[in-house]
Length: 123
Image (tube, rainbow, N blue to C red; front, side):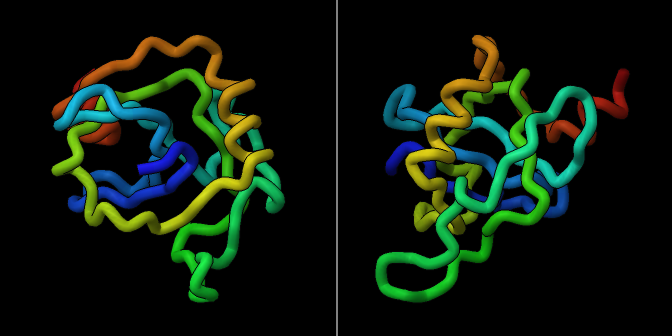
């Protein structure tokens, strides 16, 4: 996997935000940040030039710029088994990767077994 690749969760119903692969933690886990379409809670607006629209083979990515925002305060440890597929559904450009690197605010990686939606409903 490559930094900047964007993926959907296997359980899309409970994990509706795409994630961006950052780096491998070990053979079962990796670090990722989350993208959202919502301009809330300090989310950072991204721009169309942060995303590739098409793959190298000319086919379209399913995840493209769509009023996209980075959630800068959260980085997650995810298991590879959590992913819908190891084939990315989107890809950030170099400027998109630089944007994420510049805006993650030293977020401490967290490992959640619940979805963010379920977790927020427990509070």
